[in-house]
Image 1 (tube, chains in turn purple, orange):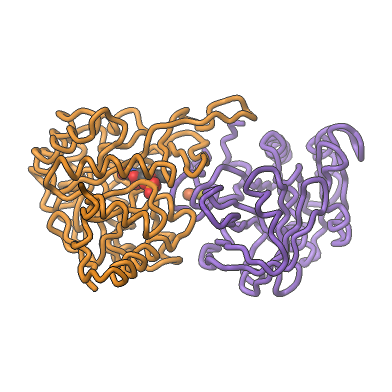
Image 2 (tube, chains in turn blue, red):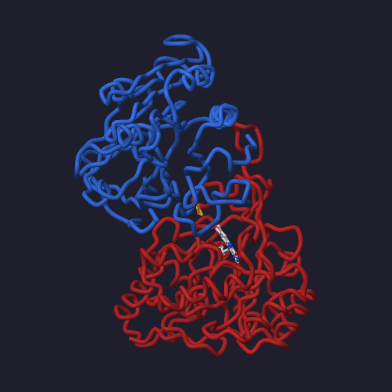
Length: 263
Length: 300
Ligand SMILES: Cc1cc2nc3c(=O)[nH]c(=O)nc-3n(C[C@H](O)[C@H](O)[C@H](O)COP(=O)(O)O)c2cc1C
Ligand code: FES
């Protein structure tokens, strides 16, 4: 179980920089995290020192920078992430993790399709790294509101992924939703294919439906409000075909078939 | 220095107890449960029960709302799967019991009679997040007394009754459960509240209302503890918003014989241990040699 590596650490910040409109890339030094972290896992980070904001923030692991460094990609959109954005090189962050289960990484897939919307691309980069390391072909379908909200394009490309972009306003790539182009990519090459989706609920739900129609393996990374982040409080429960499960400990990655969609 | 605490006939290493619903076995990897006074796992009911729809937690200013809804896997799972883990970690375990009917409380208590390693029972008659079998037992002196008396008549372990702040007079409830035979009371459970998610223009919690916990409720909890200590003779365990040793000392100076820590663990898993250490430091610096010398010293 992934959980066996769960620790609380003070991680030293190597850099914390703006990489797009409101997006930040944070890298921290940790040999043990870099060694044990799996794509899809997250860190539960204490962003402040005091009691405001009170709770830790779950931030997905974006990838490995090298053997001793891991990266996070986050969007500064509230008081908590704004505090995180204010942290400087040399400071430390108090992090619990690597938390959660992670995506399936399986060499039997000939091709994988990553479906990312908005900040949902964050964990997909780590997954792209894992599959590219196995030599698997990786197609990335990136959706965003407009071209200013697209990040990581170049990073995916330099890993050798084939990237297609959609924007809601048509300012770059195909105009419309990223799931509009999912079907054509499923049938565009050899199988077995797997789909991994992370982003807005409507996007993941649509991806799950399409995967079901084509009978293709599909995992989604769910988001829910968290308190403890380690499975203790049952605060992050989502409904599944086997009852309520905890996003932080049983997820955040779930098989698309087991999710009972409500959003 | 002596931090040993006697409550309801059980002896604890120290007065710091981890509150029900907030300290799962997952925390065993970040902190040593054997260093804590006791651990109270999530409330258990006779059968497994499912919880409330998401979202179940919501951050507020210096606090959080929750509407978990007493989700648990039932008493058998607790006894067979969970309790042994806690005992294996060297924890002193107080079991929290919840139920929809008095009979359910009694039956769970009876099952616990035959289980080694449970030091005491805490009756959760104060959960605000269920339709039946929660807060209504803790809101009426008569019902609170009936549950207490029924459990006391069968239980072979000390019984602590956990009180809700969502009442007009907590001292009336405390007196009623004392008269019914409670060995101690603990207070407070969460304070009813709500939040609106303005982005969605909807209530923030799936269940609309929930229980507020964390630093925001500390002054409310402290006032209720102070008044309850003045109204009854059995020990009072104080909780609500404790995050530091100083917070814990406030409750003990107000007359609490022990304290519990809930939400603070989510922020810093080692809070319990830190509070134990901080109380020790305070006693040393102020030349006390026994924790009992501190209890109630701020009372006028
Ligand atoms: C997520 C969560 C779950 C809780 N579950 C329970 C429970 O199952 N039984 C219970 O008696 N109290 C439960 N409580 C209440 C706490 O034990 C405690 O009374 C309350 O949170 C106030 O203390 P605090 O401010 O230190 O958290 C829960 C509280 C939280 C935040
Ligand atoms: S956030 Fe506490 S169980 Fe997931």
